[in-house]
Image: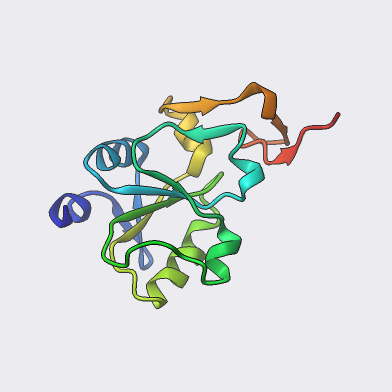
Length: 136
């Protein structure tokens, strides 16, 4: 797994980032995608992958992390803006095999990667990530 994980992605600053295609292949090989969006954000659209865990950013910031430190994880959010600070937190806590999905769910959808959509939980917002509750 280590060779597969570290032979993919690119380094920007100290953060390892992965493209959508790389994440798809890595998750099929056993890497875990950690969706760090808050719970209300992932009820409408979710990553349709094996090995997806929902662990909201707020829980990670409170150090509520039920993940094995020896596992391989790729963090994803709505647009890729929140993964770097959370990756830094995890790194400081001893997680080594971590990276982020470049562009988050927005890029994931743009690349036509598999998404589960629940139309009853539709959100609204000015961007493709639709991160606000839908107006009644």
